[in-house]
Length: 113
View 1: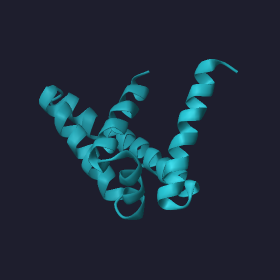
View 2 (view 1 turned 90 degrees about the horizontal axis):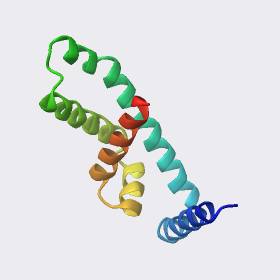
View 3 (view 1 turned 135 degrees about the horizontal axis):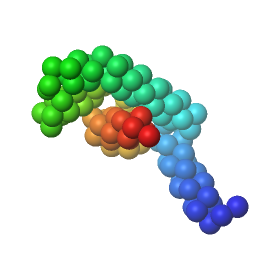
View 4 (view 1 turned 135 degrees about the vertical axis):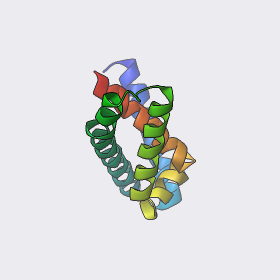
């Protein structure tokens, strides 16, 4: 096992420890993360297949268009993860909007590959 793998496992263990301490169940944190990842993947795929293609066809795929579609993706994801899931994510990582925004950017980069 490489040193990098051990460091990553240690970091995840520390995060889970603090999450379990705060929420009483590390499984809830893992489930909330999985749900958020699923929502982000679904929202990005949906918008890339519909809105992005329409914007490109209309010649509106520029910096403003990209910002608009990202704002729309963030809003859609936030609507889907409010409540308990949003509270768990926010409690562990900080601001929910910032976390969702960062995960959307990551998913868009993954889709480009």
